[in-house]
Image (cartoon, rainbow over all chains, first blue to last red):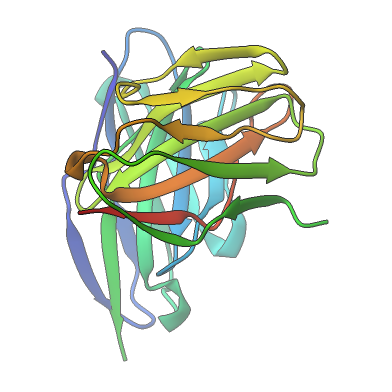
Length: 111
Length: 112
C-alpha cells in the first residue's frame, strides 16, 4: 500500500522566518503529489501539486515545493512566514483514483 | 457558485442508529470522494465515484455505503452507527484529470 509520512507533528516558527515542512512517500513509480492547507474548522485547500516536469513547483500564498525522486520527498517551503500561515498542512499522493494523505503538520507562528 | 456543500454540519447519533451525510457539488465534476479525518491520523478515503452510477471502495469502506445517481450528489450512508465512526467527514470533488480536489466544510459526527 502507498504511504505518506510527515515526520513533524508540530512546528513553531517566528513570523518572517523561513519554513520547510517535510514529506516522504512510498510508491514505485513517480506519483502525483500534493500539498493542502487546512485552517481550523475548515475543509482543505490545495496549495500546489506536482505531476511531472520541473521538480520545483510554485503554489499559492508564496509556497513552493521540490520533488526529489532520489529521496522520495516532496518538501514544502516558504521564504518568509506570515501569521496567517498558521494552520495544518497535509501532504498527499494520488495513485490511480485513490488519494493517500499524511498525518499532517501543525504550524504555529509566533510574533 | 457554492462549490461543495455538506449537510448537516454536526450530528450526534446513538449506537445502532443510521443516517445519511449529504454532499452536493455544482461544478459538474465527474469525481467525488468521501474522507474521514480523525485526530492525528490525517484523511482516509472511504469511497469515491468516477461518475454517476459508478462507485468504488477506498481505504476504509467498512460500515459505510454510497450511491451516485446524479453528477451533483454523492450521499454517504451509515447503517449501524458505532463509536468508531465518530469523526469529521469531508466530501470532495474534482474534474477530469483529478488535478485539484475541492473540499466541503465537513460534517462532525459523534456516536454515543
